[in-house]
Length: 230
Image (cartoon, rainbow, N blue to C red; front, side):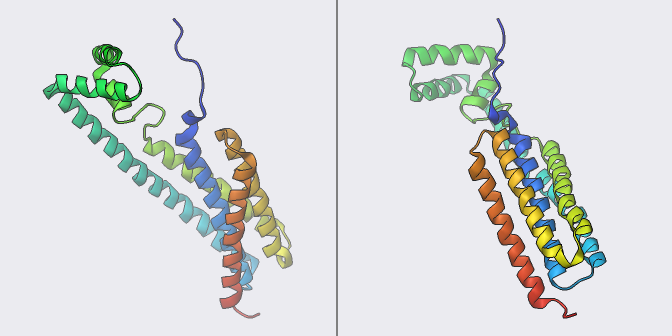
């Protein structure tokens, strides 16, 4: 008998969320930093130094933040599984009734629910309770290291794009060039992420582009307001 071969979008949630978050933050934060510093009438060299510093600091921050956050989730999952394992050892009959009740609530007839619970507990009692009582599955299991590496790497890649624009665009057009180019990058990222995740492409594109433009406009305004007068 062949195993389950069908692939689902949910299988991508772990790395896709971290990757999209990292790339989006890389583009938005670095482009905003570049635009804000440039709006303060800083020289190109100063803008690039600020941008590179933002790239390094942001990538490290993303990695640390994702690792700590997802590790906390993993710790909670482990604690729940340990508790469930203890309850199975101390009250097997009670856990059997609990699983049976879950299946009844989902629409099975009591007798069928009893037999299903009985067979699943013989096969893998902890796995059955983890899946059907706690909602823990292999697809959604927390992976701290994977999330940290994905966030850091994609942040660095995302941040490098507006930095490249800051190098290539003429200094007199840096603010507009970096802003426009970064919005194109964000729109492309939103469309790609939506397509990979099976979501609405237009909505995904509009969402990241809107908030990216707001962030860059805000930092440009602050830079112009408090920047040095040439």
